[in-house]
Image (cartoon, rainbow, N blue to C red; front, side, top):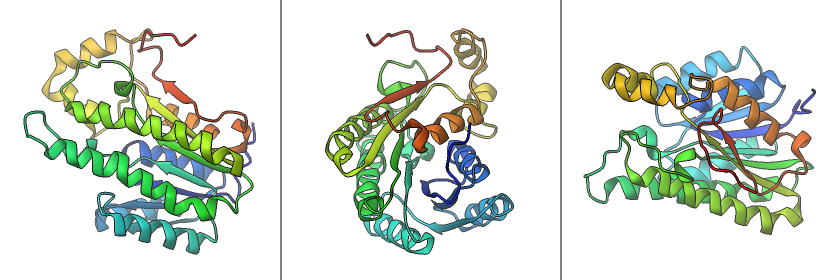
Length: 258
């Protein structure tokens, strides 16, 4: 299937590692132009060196908890790419080793990045999206937003991701009339080398094996499997999907929405 992403301009927050890395690569492989941001000059340089072997990629340093930085990155990226067709909200405080029992700090980080940072990202991108003929917002959420997931993680993670899903639903209803679609993707446990589940496998193998056993296919998902869904939802091939939260977890969650 041709996703018709050739020449489309996509902004991906935290597009340098984890799921953001797989998403950026997938969009570049489909012919999109990509702008990423991250907090490390070293990480940014390494990502762009690889990405530019696949297509056209640019990037900047941006702390998504800093409103001025979010606005600057979004506006400058839109100007450099001469437009924005796609916004992928992948930045999250979850990558900052938040721990339960540290008072309000995990909550404030999660609120500032997962809710306020993403809200400002989309609001700043809106003038560019209005000029697009295929505008799409894709928010990366989590199954932890929709049901309990018994792993060592602060409750601020699922709570703020749930709020982000609700925000996306609101944008779908209010911006849809202007031709801007908005959807969420909620991945289940995804194994990425060097990231959370790799760490859990090393330090807490019992928890890792228990989670694997809870999957009907007895394995965790991959970054590519999530990126494929994100690419489809970002593309005009999903033009009649708006306001949805797409669960990508291999059947890990057991609830059914009738």
